[in-house]
Image (cartoon, rainbow, N blue to C red; front, side, top):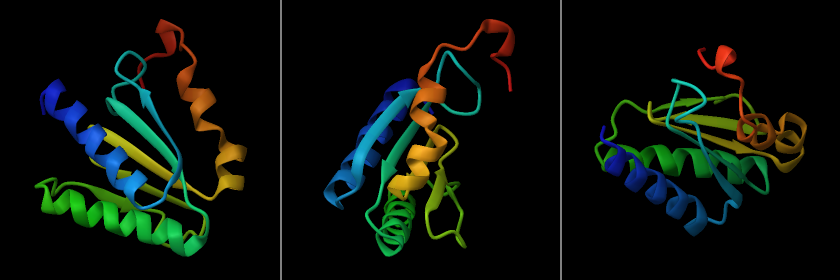
Length: 118
């Protein structure tokens, strides 16, 4: 996937989350930090059902857009879901779990070059 397509996909994911009332949607550029993905998007849902429906809706819409290799992890969790599109990783948390893991802080900080590869 080209960078332009990845940026368009990131914007589309943010719009889907926003349109469906996800809270505090944050995008983190990972391109110079790791090879696992180009972006990480972190959002919150206001209940277990909201988190589940956001994740299912996002996977469904991504598949309709032709992103067939996306995976949903955390199916049995009530407070966290992960959608991996290969280029973009989306975390949807319950606000308390999000605060506990604080991925925004961890991934927003510059990582020393010797620790860059995962």
